[in-house]
Amino acid sequence: MTEHQGRPRTIRSFAHISYGTPLDQQAGWLYEHAWRLAQHERGGADAVDHALAVLALTTNLYHDARWDGIRQAVRAGATVPEIALALGMAIRDARDLVHRIEARDRELGRAFSGAGR
Image 1 (cartoon, rainbow, N blue to C red):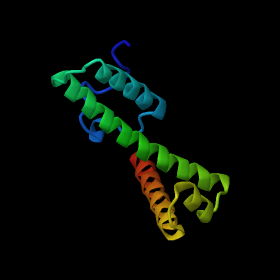
Image 2 (tube, one colour):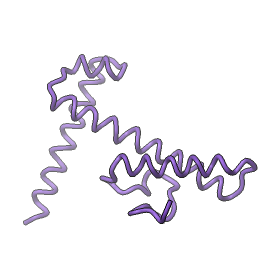
Image 3 (tube, one colour):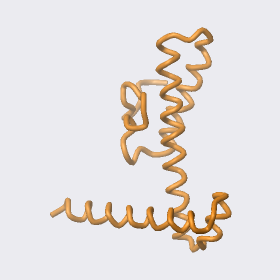
Image 4 (cartoon, rainbow, N blue to C red):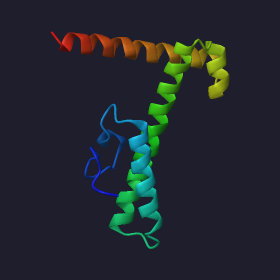
């Protein structure tokens, strides 16, 4: 793979992954780091870097995909009980999660609409 479009030089935590990085791009980085990690049987500094990148990317992908999936399910008309069932959680917890996502979206919308002034 060539030097990556927009990838930070080092990914050692999910904070190193820019907000809004497309999921497919993150998945590509994850594949690359996982493949390179598999090449380092004996460990070493490179193996540590790749292992931490794999952890950071899987964490970020999980959260981004989950939030985006919930957001899209709500927009498509899924009910909170249906979302709870899909996530394997209590309806009350799913309702709280949906409300947090909606509140965050409203905050981001206000922040972006105010930035253009």
